Image 1 (cartoon, rainbow, N blue to C red):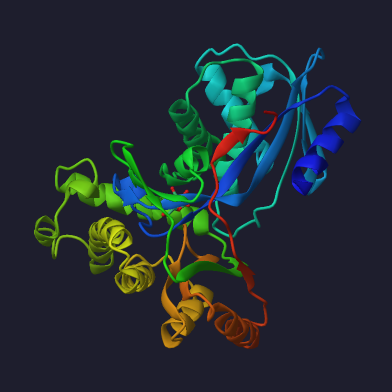
Image 2: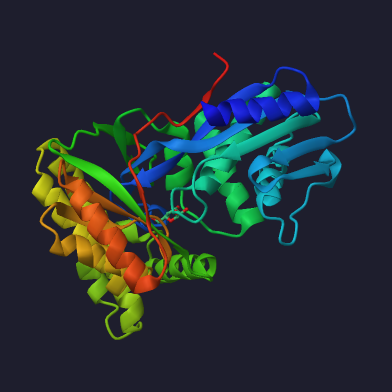
Length: 381
Ligand code: GLA
């Protein structure tokens, strides 16, 4: 609520009319990492941290957008929308407008103020939340009639074209369609979804942020995607979702071992995600925890998107009786781990980890208890 008031207050101080207010959430992902762009299954949920946007029409000849967290205001004309070098947050906004203009949608000039409480680089999808909050706000303001699925695709395209990350659909989907107290088992090929109540029995989810984000993570992400596409096309398939481990063996010796292992990881991670849904249904928490640990092992050793800090946190989790599963979450190379912790034993573990992490890396880690929330919605009603 504090964030809502901050954004609204700033908007009214600058522009005085009553704005439309929109919130878009960040997301966590239980399991199913780096499989969305392989048409696989993912298991995300929207969280209570997010981005809040205030928007209203203006009669000027240009638009104004204020990013409160950066204390920056950007003035631009709708007829001069193009990707900016080192544009930062501006490229998310411009990327969305560009996509809307490509669809010949009738936009007018607007004033916008936004701020968020998703820690940058935490792997909790502040990017998707920003894109969704902007497209949802503009759609509402100008009555464009876009449905949620169209908005998800616009957000993803903006990220591809203006931000330069060839992301899958998971983050934008979860941030748009998230449902309070539910995880979404999403088939990234058909976009069919099944909701699972987030009931972990006598366990809870704890996030630990390494507070590091290693450089080159965007280009490493795009590299991984290229490897997957190359391998699936060598097998005459559109995506690795359609490739079995047996089929992959036919490429043994024809591709590098490192690439082979990456494809194998993806095939196995898709299976793990489907198994996780069964565990959740049967309240098999031990089974779910083991899947999280195996997912991390694959992400670290085979897919090679982890880093020392993430591996250290997961190794500590493995050694602690209070934690039954843990893994890195999101794109990798930093950000958060997600931990399945026995209720009541979390505090001990957290204190131990905080101290050990500080001793090892000289940086403090942050601990978040997030609640699972709705995705993107109007705050005015
Ligand atoms: C980032 C991308 C997602 C997904 C994850 C890894 O968050 O935006 O599309 O690929 O990494 O699972």
